[in-house]
Length: 557
Image 1 (cartoon, rainbow, N blue to C red):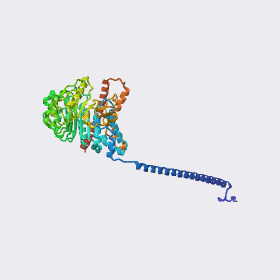
Image 2: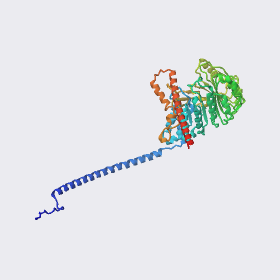
Image 3: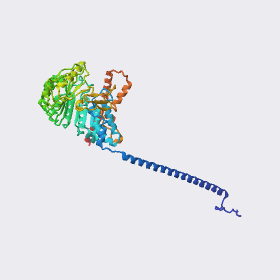
Image 4: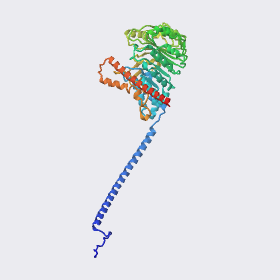
């Protein structure tokens, strides 16, 4: 059997002309790409070096600029910064914190300025919080609840609160909520010195639907919650005097008191006749209407004020007890007397002042309205006389001219005579805020947004333009900054009526015609009040539900 011949095997190392050519091409391409990448890298390095050089130059210029600015910058202490910012923020004494007919009111604008200061920078925030919280004004129950929540979460803010103005209506079903939250707020403000108390039933619950004892209960129980270390107290909600008399003796450090007497003639047998003594009271303001004349007489007999030096009587009618009040031995140190007649549309009633030289021998500053009859006996200690400008009938103007003519005889030692504008807000005693000076001075304008007062040697006048608006103020204070970076401003719209009710009012005005009658506006406002009250009740119900749930869990355990 024969074998088939086999060809010898190929040597793998033997070069092939075809494969060798392809490898040469690939190697050449690779070298070319490497050179391109190296060139691009070199260009990028040059560009990077150029940018780094520009960055170093910019940093050097910035450092030099910061260094030069640092030499010129002055870091003021907080105390000096506060004095500067006070020039931009009006004191509450200049403003009327009650509900206004116009929006935005001067108070609303001042509140906006205070909030802006807080949000400017860290140093301004330290000072701004004090300016924002030193005076708290509450017009609704919702902001009171929000304020209590804020003070509970940030107790340090309570140290800033010095004054609280309460101008809100309390519905019959909200009495317990109001008292509970008010107690929490008062407890959280250890440095509180001034309270204006005007809690009352709102207009939407008239006397035909709610009995008088509800107002009596709210006022009496809330008066009992007031801190006894107050220095200034204003009770403006139709005072039931026996409620105040029950606790008046506990306010031993009270220095300023303002009360509005209610009609007591029909229940005068229930009027308190206890002797009251206010050892440190230096300033007293009493508002008297036609129904409280006899009550004012009882006050004149029973209140002892040995330290009283400033007295203002707002007379809605002429009281025959003015002489009784002033002739009391404890009133002999009065140096300032303001007899303000509040009736502008009627002819002035006569106010006899024959007793004045004997009753107030130390009197130095007196403010009179039309109708005052000066004493025939000269009063030598009076040096300053102010007169309220009349805006009533011509007879009032004639009476003031007669007082001006008789002043040199009745007050031979008087040096100044000024006119006080009745357009100024009635919440402030302007002649006392700007006492007269013997030396001639230039006019001073206290100019704030929406409000301007000019003080000259012969007048105190409100000179700003009349506010124009069609909305009720209906706005409440906030005192809770809303910013995630600032720990809390989370309840801004909740606690500020301008964040909720104010915007709703603007929307309503855009939809409605400008000629809507007053009744429709009142209905809209009542609807907003009801919506807000429903929101407050919902918050209260959720809190009660959480508390009930925790109690059930405890019982189950």
